[in-house]
Figure 1 (cartoon, rainbow, N blue to C red):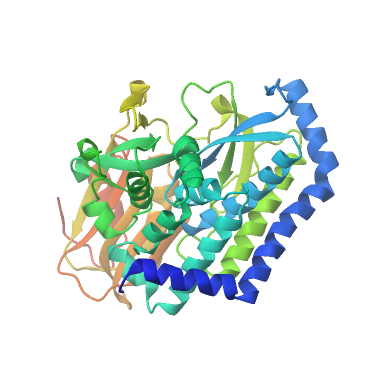
Figure 2: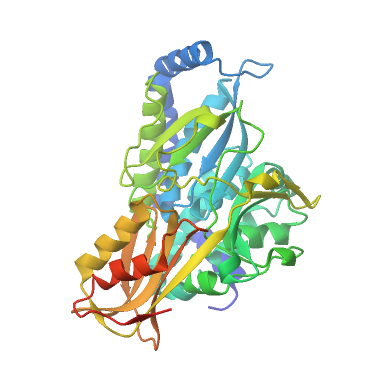
Length: 439
């Protein structure tokens, strides 16, 4: 599709001149402002309680300093615009001081756009998600087109968002992006990169973090000046900042069931959910964690050392990572080393029962195993060749034109995926005819 910079300019102009888009942006920002105003007394009471009972630290102006953690949740991460707007409004009232944002995949997209906004609001985030929604709406089979490679439109969005020096400095100094990197697919490790040397390096790192395509999973991409990390792609995970155990962190568990798609309707729905869950959390002095299952989003705020999930595999949080200050080429806390493992199950064109396969994939993502991503091409009874994709709370099947090799790839923490033989047996049980499997 021609010059992607020209595509972005056209779509951005359409969003800016579209009365419905502009009205929706203003309505959503007003929704967050109204929600804060309506519940401000309860919010202040909750903060006083936590500052007193839990000894939350304050800065010199009496505000609570907060880091933000946004997991990789696909286009569910639009919800982060809602929570961010609530926090930004509360910061303007002197209650908070927003610090650094760490994001992975869709959470990294939202982090860059939030930090790029000159007014520290969600306007930039909403605008560019609408730009993408317009592109997806006008592009035939936009989801299928990105199965092999994510659209370059996001690269141009990032470039446009940080073209001003002040915007780039905010992303550079306060943005942390999680990726899976390694010299081969079987050597991936969880890396968190920050303080980039230049714009292009920053742009490509955030783009790679969201490269959840087959090309990303199988090939990855090298980052300029960071070739020693090997190939980088989607699959990185967030975790509390090392050395900040006594600091407060806000975690948005943004798994709301809309990971693969982005429309104007989903943008509105997810933004409002982000606002509502953040307000709900602030109005409850005791229940810090509002999410209980993968199918329900929510927010929590507490000391960094207390931000966790039972089992630690389903929340989007990771146990460890390697942190790299890119500009100084300094790695922080190498004790946080984590390997990423990829197990490939090869199938010889047998038919699989759709319901059984979906149950297997969802069960694998929600189990105590550290499985983060599932991708595969296989024959489904009554539907033909399909692409299987699973991440977080989402498992989908999309039609695929043709493929000579059928396979399923499971990506997760090294040593925590379980035995390949057990995965093969469980997957084989989903076939209408027992398939032959080979390594």
